[in-house]
Image: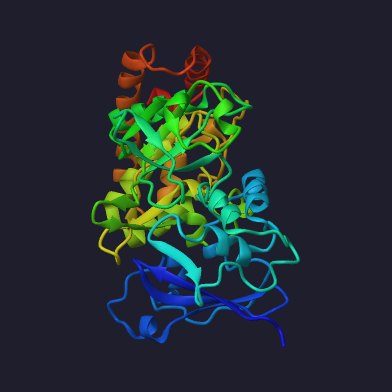
Length: 409
């Protein structure tokens, strides 16, 4: 008989479903009856609603992969491979990877073994020497994405440092280390998010911190020099976790499909239906800002919803705002706006078309874009020489702005 392993899926600490590995790397997700029958249940995500707004309770068995919602909670690319090695897990076997990393996920989701097993049956074929210590090492880096980032807490003794928890659970900050490939990325992100806040975009608390001031870095990583970027987690509050859902999860696509399976028009359509005018205006403000600053990496996972009241979605605070053009010359955005991906194609006419196709009122969309351009030009000229970003970033954005019709409106 095949080994059967079960992971309990909890939302705000309460069981709402299970992920069951039924053997042969096949996994089934199902909700509990209590969650299905609870008319005031907290929302797990738009991915679990049908076109009529009803809960989708039947999900197909998946092979090696989890359903996209849970797959998107896991790290990607080289970071996934690195953490899988730390945990002693094959990176393609997502059930086991979630088993190792499920205690510090984004939002209010936690995943833990139903029977308290340290390691599930069937894992030994990947790593006979798997240990609790390996799992703890991997857990410290359990946040989704491709960048080397992890949860941290304030170091009260230093008052300006951060500490990586030994267990990897409980951090209220996300820390991103300097890139070995691109110079000055932490300073870039700090500067762009600082500008975004001054333009009127909702931005969490942010900071630059010397790598040497971070305690608890795993062995070898402390050799990095310079500054790291830290951002306050908007999914962690004194009252407890706040649930979130990125738009790859919303559209039920796997992480590797985050660039090609939807457009900004599609995101706007969802926001119009779920968040109303406030969410749409904030979206247009950010989309215009990202176009002006040359951010070619605003894919589906860099836009998220947040559930402040546990049931009603809103556009989450901004994150991962970076000017990418100083590192990689690119004339196109990560996703299609409505008809084009080209930055210089992001015009008032393109916005009018986007509004029409997404069923949005045109006037607020156009006015928000114009106001954002006006605010950005004022803030940029006043602040660009005072920000910690490298001079090459400033020069790249200046050259970029000269090419954009939207920048002249």
